[in-house]
Amino acid sequence: MRRTTASPAISLTLLAVGLLVMVFYLLWTFSWVNHTNVVIQRALLVEKLLLDLQTATRGYYLTSDPSFLQPYRDSLPELPAAIQAFKDEVRDNPLQHTLAEKVDADAQQWLVWAGAMLRTAENNGEKPSVAELQASKERFDNVRDDVTQFLNNEYQLRDERAQQTTRITWTVLAIAALATTLVAIIQCRGVKRRLGDITLTYREALRLAKERRLRAQGLLEELDRELKAVGEIQRSLLPIQLPNIPGLDLAASYQTSRRAGGDYYDFFRLPPEHPDDHRLRYGILIADVSGHGTPAAVLMAVTHSIAHGFEQPTSPPNELLAFVNKRLCDSYTTDTGVFVTAFYAIYDPTTRQLTYSSAGHNPPRLRRHRDEHFVPMDEAQGFPLGVVPDEPYPLACLTLAPGDTIVMYTDGITEARPTGSSTMLEVEGLDGAMAQATTDPAELLNAVLEAVKLIAGDEVNDDRTVLILRANGLTDVSDAEQQHTVIVDTPVAAGTPTKV
Image (tube, rainbow, N blue to C red):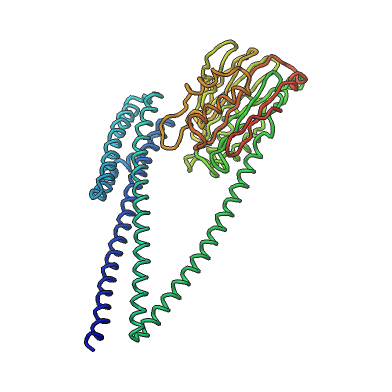
């Protein structure tokens, strides 16, 4: 009798002890998941402060407006404490602590470099050179890469701990079910009823979770449809095909990093300057909105609308840029910090004269006939659109000879690179790729796209647009209709150029 009575009691006691051990272990794993979340939040704060510092200095160098440095002054004193806090959180993890120390060291090096350039700019009014800015950017990219690697490790660690917690949870539930069954055998019907209630609650939670998942999936699909519609509307604002411009062969490529993008190019057939003038001139515009995705696409559409609303189409290019800049500053960009770079040129087929002006855009590359080298068209540079309301834009002009080639592009081409890498195509890589091709615009375009794909693969981290013009010596419309144009109209990924 004693053995019969003691056996269930001993079994239940051992089972209860084992269950308590598993519960405490489960609570311990929960605490580590929470600790990982705290570490991630510390690292994200460090990343935000660093981005505020870098963005503020770049905005100041670009505009010379001291107000852009306010985020720098706000974030600089907070950064040491933030870095120390996230280093302290990972002292128990040698790998992550080493990475945290590397983030601290690289950040301090960049701050010393950036601080020196900033003091020079503030005290002497001397802006950093392109090489110094590039070096600063490369140092900052090293810091961001360190933070990204640190976060990836923490995310992986959190996932592993979450999976471990899930397994332990299921084990605890299984043991609880077994304990309930044993207690039920020795007539603990009340526990059995409670277990049934728990099962029903769990099933209801699963049902609700499934409904919410399906609802979220529907919302995501609806959002994707809306983004796709935005992209289609945006692409409808671009030229359906390239125009027949007397004296020019054209080729173009347009590629967005997302459903919609902020790059923009356009052509304008301009009326004669006066009634006795029968010449037709052509406006050629390329622009790039800062940022990516739907916000950039919306501002691109606004820029398109403003440019097409210019009431003096025969005016020189700098007046159109000033008009667009004024409208953007008045109504769209002053409070957002967004800006637009643009290059606008007017081509006269009769004289083969190209008059142009630039609003902070990448200078197009010019190669004269029988010249192996490209040179920048940087004689008419002004501030980007949407930054300074009354910015005056300079004007420059040149005369094209048959065989001369101009390559216009957005920064997504020269800054093409794979994720996590600091190696970009840059202007030298662009020139090198085009030097290997003939002067035919289609072949030049293919050479550029191949060079971008070679360095960045299939990744598209920024919108990319290329527009190529080559003077062919023809001067009337009937001759121009015999030339070929090339269009690459690819909203997501570049394809094979199509001859029309």
